[in-house]
Length: 137
Image (tube, rainbow, N blue to C red):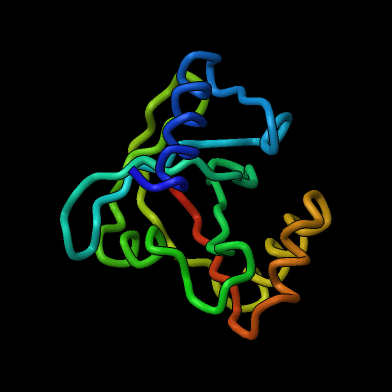
């Protein structure tokens, strides 16, 4: 298991043990667990990530810490958009839909205002960081 996978596994375990609450870097932040299927491997992975509540949608941001390429989970959602998420103690069936244009810009700015790390990620990369809406199915 890689260091990143081990770190994520610890967050997942803490999330599940504490009804969706974790400490450390994510303490107090809205966090969900994304279950996604590998675009090539078909293997299901669980990834903790911050989200922005948006009505009945959960918005997630493919920032990858400001890297110049999108994270693997983004490509997985494009290939397999019907997934599940865990929010608190609830497992929710959702469909991933990319948010684009002016709405994308507004929602990213909203997240960056709440969590300035997202502004730093955007400043580090030349790509437009995708915003994905997870919508209940």
